Image (cartoon, rainbow, N blue to C red; front, side, top):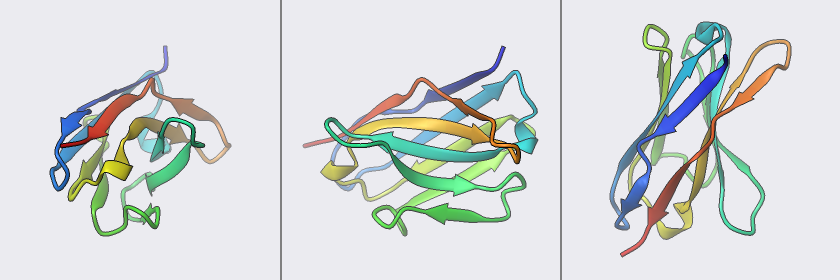
Length: 117
């Protein structure tokens, strides 16, 4: 059974940090590029960051570049999103996504991140 399980979300003050984790099971994790998406209320889901299968290349959305860092540990079947200098506009449900070279995709259930004082 394929699973992507996100954790690490919560309530944080502006300027704070959170680290999200996404643990994968049921498929060959190292064969899938990993991404983080987010969706705020009333808005479309947007791509936040992506990382290649080996971790050798990363891409970021314009609004998070320089503040967020995506990484992965293929030995632990886990992807991470380190979020620093958080802003209220970062408030959203954050989703983990796995995608292989053939276009197969898996999604996690999401974890809520709320940035508020």
